[in-house]
Amino acid sequence: MKKLINDPRSVVDETVQGFGLAHAGLVSVSTDPLFISRQDVPVAGKVGLVSGGGSGHEPLHAGYVGLGMLDAAVPGAVFTSPTPDQILPATLAVDSGAGVVHIVKNYTGDVLNFETAAELAEAEGVSVRTVLVNDDVAVEDSLYTAGRRGVGGTVLVEKIAGAAAQRGDDLEAVAAIAERVNANVRTMGVALAACTVPHAGTPGFDLAEDEIEIGIGIHGEPGRHRIPMESADAITDRLLGPVLADLKVSSGDKVLLFVNGMGGTPLSELYIVYRRAAQIVADAGATVERSLVGNYITSLEMQGCSISVLRLDDELTALWDAPVHTAALRWGV
Amino acid sequence: MVLDVNWTVKWLTLCAQAMAEHRLELIELDRAIGDSDHGENMDRGFQAVLAKLDEDMPETPGAALKMTAMTLMSKVGGAAGPLYGTAFLRAATAVGDAIEVEPAAWAGALAAARDGIVARGKAEPGDKTMVDAWTPAVDAARVVADGGSPDVLDVLVAAAEAAEAGAVATDPLVARKGRASYLGERSAGHRDPGAVSTALILRAAVGAAA
Image (cartoon, rainbow over all chains, first blue to last red):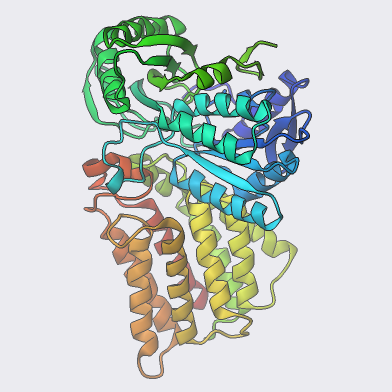
C-alpha cells in the first residue's frame, strides 16, 4: 500500500487541518470535538444544516460547508460514523434558534449516532429534524437488510436543502425539501478496483483483474452482482437501467444527471459514461435539465463511478441554480 | 470472589487488553463482511476507557460501567459505539449504586445490556449481529444464577462460554442487519465481528474474577 500519509491514525485530523488552512476564509475548524463549520455560524434566522459521516468520501461533507449548503460537517474516522460528542456541539454551534436539519446517509452507525445526538440536542432545547438519504437502488431487498444506502443523492440533497435554508425556509419546509429530493433521486454505482482503508492496510474487498462489482456501495459494500469487465457503454446501461426503472422516469420528465467518480477514475472516463447516460435519458424521452460530472462523493482511491438521476420540478431546479459557495461547489457568487 | 469495583476495573482493563490483542483479527473479520473498522474502533474506545480510569477511579461497579458507556459512545463511532454504549449504560442502571453485585443481579444486568442493544439496533437473534452472542450469554447466566447458591464465577463462565459458542454459531447465518446485510447470501461462511467482540468482553469478565 502506497499512500500520501504520515500515520494511519492521524489521517482524518491532518486532512481536516489541511482543509481548514486551504479554505480559511470559508470555514472554521473545531479540533476537539472535531467538526467543520461555516465562518459565520450561527446565521441569524436561518435553519442550520448539519451532515456528517465517515471520512474517505471527500469532498463530502466538509467540502460542502458554506453559503447555500451546509452549516457544519462532522467527520468520523475513515468509513466510520462520527460520534454524538461531535455531532451535538456542531448542532448547537449552528442553531440560530430556527432549528437544525440533520442530513444522514442511511447506514446503521450514522443513524444510531445522529439519533443519539438529536435526542441530546432536543434535551438542550434545539429542534432537530432528521432526513435520511437512501437513494441506492442496488439494495433490492430493504426488508432483509439495513435498507437502501445513502450514496450520490446525498450531494444533491445537501445542495438543494441548503438553498432552501439560505432563502429563509423554516425548519419543517427545509426538511420537506430534503425529503422531496431524496424521494426523487436514485443512484447505482460500479467498482472496477477496491480501495484500501489506511489503518487496515489491505484492500476492502478482492476483485480480480477482469472483474467489476455492479451496485457497489461507497464503503465497498457489495452490490447486485460481480461480472466480467465490459465496455463503458455496457456498464452505463447496467447502472442506469435500474435507476430509471426504479425512479419510473417517463417521457417528458426533466432530470438532473449526475455522474460521480469514486476517487480513482479519471474525469475523461466519467465523461465517456456521461455521454452514454445522456443518450439513454434522451431515448427515454426525458430531458437533462442540469448535469454534474466529477468526484463529489468518493471512496478513497476506489476505481469506479456512480450515476444518479434526480427528477426535477421548477422549484428544485431553482434551488439547484441558487448561489452556492463551498470548497467543492461554487456558482452564482 | 465478589463483583466489586476492583473486579469491574480489572474487567475493563482486560477488555482493553483483549481489544488491542485482537484488533487485527476483528479488522480482518470486518473486512470480510463489513468495512474493516471494528477492531480499530473497539481498540480506540477501550484505550480511552483506560485513560479515563487513570484520571478518575470510580467508586462503585455502576459508576465504572456508566463511565465506560459514555466513553464508548463518544469514542468508538460506527454502530458499535452507540450499541456498546447503550449496553454498558443499561447494565450500570441495573446494578445501581451497589458496592457488590450479587450473581442474580449480574445476570439481570447482562439481560438489561442485551435489551438495550436490541432496542437501539433493532436486531433479533439470528440476524448475524452481536445479539447472537449476547442472547445465549444472558440465558446461560440466568440459568446458573437461578440455581441453588450460585457462585458468581460460574455465572461469568457460563456467559462467556455461551457468547463464544454464539459467535461461532454466526458463521452460517445470512446477515439481516448492519453493513454485512448488503452481502445477502454472501455473508454466510463468515463470523460476525460484533459477536466476537462481545465474546471477548464477556471472557475478560471471567479473567478479572480468576
